[in-house]
Length: 488
Ligand code: NDP
Image (tube, rainbow, N blue to C red):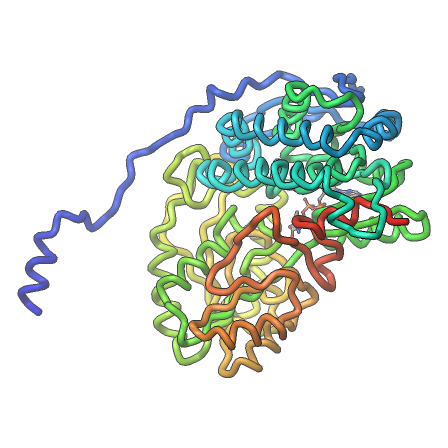
């Protein structure tokens, strides 16, 4: 033993692992001073504008149009005008446009990744390795379906529904755009898309991809603005609303759409349980738990924000988790070493801070690894709460930040009961070596997606969506085409 220790001492591995900065250059992105509204294939001037910031240092990036109700109506009219010709195009022709978009996104992926990280605050390695490849893959995948709709829905005579109004959030701006636009276009619909107020820039750059792809004018229209623009789109003459965002706004939209005949899909919040059994491969599970909650600063609707640990391995699991948390690098989103980037906005930072304070007040024990947060910008250290009771707000409410709440269980039945004790039902994770237990758990968990021995895996072929207050309708796969089709 002493011999081993001696050898270890002489090992050249440094004790404090320091990283030289590896910043990605932002030069590849050419920002305009001001962006207008993309309607009918042209840039239409708006009356009002607002400034969009970079959350990493609060520096202004560009002025962006605030679309009024009249602007939204113009966009919907352009989409309506473009609809008959687009819907009539043979599927094989529509798929050519989608393939082109997929290819151009892949070609320009570095530019998009840098812009996504600049405007949204997510680490460049995530926008580069997750958001962009997946966004392009969604267009590739749905391009493949555009000329096979009759086979996708045999004997049902599928046809497009018309104009889709699509409202997306700020956590995966370009990826959510792809989830919405790709199936809508493949099915023969036209689109008016409203990006989130804090992250409009990649959607506006996407308009340039459409120009390159020579998509017919009016097939995709992009109107930027705040919640008022979203509300105007909901009330406009569209045939369908597809929304991703908070449960609160989702419910308000559902109320407004009720009785209008408009189709609706809602992809809302979550409070997923990541369930760790005592036979799981612990190191692998800890990686999955870290990814489950700290990926994209926890701004993920399906984040594994509740960790349920079997009591028999509680101590070693928490020890390993804390050790791993201490190695997370928090900082500049454009640094290729960064694991946890900037919080998306001041409002979101305030919301996270308030919920973390509530957790402390309610009696949970907080741990944050020592890390130096940048002075400017919006930052929150990776956080874990132990001693959490089911009733605490941090165990019930969606925090949407890098904050994990740990609870314990003794039996699989108790794990299921605790995991399902939430108003949400979007996702869950199960960590165990036992296949039969995975299958049993997957059947018991009221969640749209259940990952086994992994977490946060996304694929365009796989449907994604929730139960209960996590919404309804599915995106991805064949299931994601259905809400954009009418059937005879
Ligand atoms: P919102 O639900 O407000 O935002 C989602 C989208 O809806 C944005 O484009 C937003 O515009 C738009 N919007 C806002 N109000 C209306 C309205 N009345 N009618 C139509 N569209 C509207 O989310 P927030 O940004 O306010 O985030 C609040 C919380 O929601 C977060 O803390 C998180 O818990 C949760 N959330 C969940 C997401 C998920 O994927 N499940 C995604 C984002 C947030 P604008 O950006 O201009 O406000």
